[in-house]
Image (tube, rainbow, N blue to C red):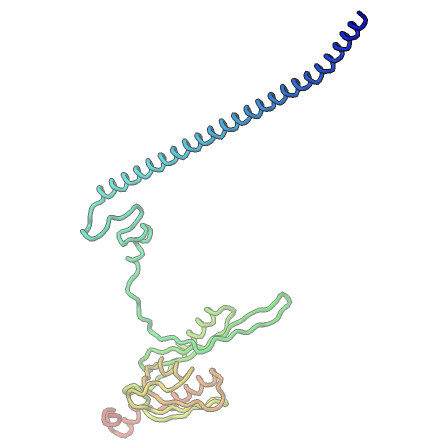
Length: 279
């Protein structure tokens, strides 16, 4: 009996030892199953959320496309109704759009074409010979002033020059033109050229002018050319000698003009007509 009890005790002990690991395995297997089930649930939720987002995006794109199509249809209908209502002025012209004038521009420009007349021809030809800028250093910086030398003429034998100074370019030019208009002189012109050879002086500048046959053109440069063009001369030979200052060359050229003899006065003194004297 004792042996049997011992065996029983031993058997019970072995059963306890064997059962304990089995319980652990069962618990581990149970935990693994729970983890697998949780992952499956999360994957299902993510898939459902992705599907819902795709459905919402598809619905949004469909709605936007529908709205755009409806707007395009409405715009086309409005344009067709406007074209149908607009009176056709001519068969080749397209109908005017909203806010467009009869000339094809905006409505606010309609009256400008009416105000614009034909360009008015100026009484005098104005030529800017020289524009100079000077600077004076002062406490706050530099002050600029401008000087302008201008030649004007009517292309009919009347020329003049003027020199003006001001703190603004436009004001300096205006002053020079006003002075030129007050100092007009007569330039004798016959058949597009001057009557005779003449030489003028001013300071260190010297200008020589010679008559030329038709087709020669104005053989001159700078200030002399401006004066001849403003006076109506088309054919002349010239040479500038000495100082090349534009102001001095202009003064020397006008000295030539002042020295030119008046054909009418000479013909009268000789008792001949202008046609007999000059041809």
